[in-house]
Image (cartoon, protein in one colour):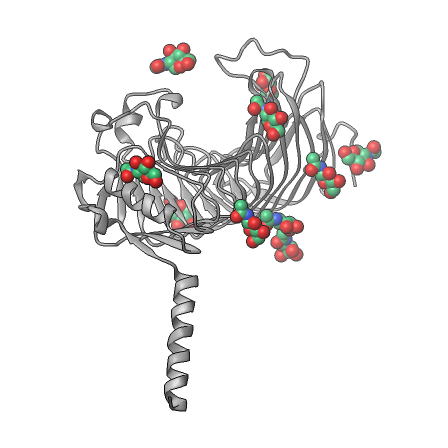
Length: 399
Ligand SMILES: *[C@@H]1O[C@H](CO)[C@@H](O)[C@H](O)[C@H]1NC(C)=O
Ligand SMILES: *[C@@H]1O[C@H](CO)[C@@H](O)[C@H](O)[C@H]1NC(C)=O
Ligand SMILES: *[C@@H]1O[C@H](CO)[C@@H](O)[C@H](O)[C@H]1NC(C)=O
Ligand SMILES: *[C@@H]1O[C@H](CO)[C@@H](O)[C@H](O)[C@H]1NC(C)=O
Ligand SMILES: *[C@@H]1O[C@H](CO)[C@@H](O)[C@H](O)[C@H]1NC(C)=O
Ligand SMILES: *[C@@H]1O[C@H](CO)[C@@H](O)[C@H](O)[C@H]1NC(C)=O
Ligand SMILES: *[C@@H]1O[C@H](CO)[C@@H](O)[C@H](O)[C@H]1NC(C)=O
Ligand SMILES: *[C@@H]1O[C@H](CO)[C@@H](O)[C@H](O)[C@H]1NC(C)=O
Ligand SMILES: *[C@@H]1O[C@H](CO)[C@@H](O)[C@H](O)[C@H]1NC(C)=O
Ligand SMILES: *[C@@H]1O[C@H](CO)[C@@H](O)[C@H](O)[C@H]1NC(C)=O
């Protein structure tokens, strides 16, 4: 065998090993019988393709959802754990829900598309998930009677990149029980008046990074709920919507634990709230180590808001003797405009004051150019802006 032939053989071998290990196998939903005509129920084809993908022995297996087609799916669950060390969903086509609540196989299901216990899951591509939620919104269903579009449960090392999610019946993307997730360059869109259409909800999850995304919905752009810590959010264009919210926490006297939430370089464009922390009266536990830094406001209604004594119908019996502790909360570098005279509302409980609140470099004005004001109850903290925060901090520590 000549030297060139040897080199050729070796390079073919290297290529083979490379693609074998790195690219793994592709499983195309069209090869499993998906029609992609937007009319036929492709759920069964997707489940067959998922079975093959998840059961494949390679390191990385890819489920391909090709572009140029529209796939109709009924409520569907992609279950792990899988044999391969990681799974990629290459979403380039459009996935649609049944067009109307009447055509859902189970309109009471809590989720439309869900993944559970799939480790190192990557959902990537330029495709779209369309929840076609309007028929759910119109009939005023309870939140418990409407599905979340994409629910991801117990999936450590998750990546979501590039995709678009529109018009979910309820929350667009929920992440629960996941450690280490990176979500970037996604778009979430729903009408401003669509009810409870949160962009991304996070609960019982740690070390989550969300960045470089646009979220325009009828409710919270991002909500961080119980059991979450190490949540970094940056470069989010939020609005319309209700802002980025920690909570609601501690409903019906329950215990809540949220810590280390850092929100930087986000824009709140015509949102109802900006940076919000909301805990129920009578709750327990804590929300601490939270910061909002370098935030741009465009006609935001409530740019900075803490409500530590939230009450609402259906929960009126909550005890008034406890509250979720709120501490070490920093607001630094807010710029822009508000439509509310009070840009800052810190409504804390007399039982446990909000503690260690820092308010620095806040330059928020009203349409008429007047500087916005702050109103507070039971807050301890400090600020370099003695004018803005005058009468605000209980221990009156304005530097
Ligand atoms: C998927 O595979 C599992 C076992 O590997 C099997 O029990 C199940 O019936 C398969 N589902 C479908 C829809 O083929
Ligand atoms: C919503 O749920 C609550 C409690 O689960 C129930 O009391 C109420 O009747 C429901 N409302 C509607 C419109 O179904
Ligand atoms: C997550 O990734 C880390 C490092 O990349 C790895 O050590 C860990 O085993 C992974 N966990 C899972 C469940 O895949
Ligand atoms: C979040 O940001 C903090 C400080 O900037 C950093 O120490 C931490 O590792 C980041 N966590 C994640 C999950 O990105
Ligand atoms: C909130 O999360 C904490 C910590 O994960 C847990 O101990 C507590 O039971 C949770 N509360 C509720 C209401 O689920
Ligand atoms: C804010 O929202 C308005 C109306 O949706 C839009 O026209 C404008 O471009 C947005 N501004 C920025 C800076 O994104
Ligand atoms: C908050 O941060 C401090 C250090 O800045 C750390 O000691 C403390 O454990 C954190 N608290 C929580 C609940 O994570
Ligand atoms: C916020 O902006 C200031 C001034 O541009 C900069 O010094 C600081 O590092 C920024 N903070 C973050 C967390 O990016
Ligand atoms: C603060 O919260 C209490 C209890 O929910 C409420 O009665 C009060 O109106 C709130 N104050 C402000 C300024 O929002
Ligand atoms: C007021 O409380 C803040 C933190 O909550 C603390 O840093 C400051 O020293 C206190 N000021 C006074 C005068 O006690």
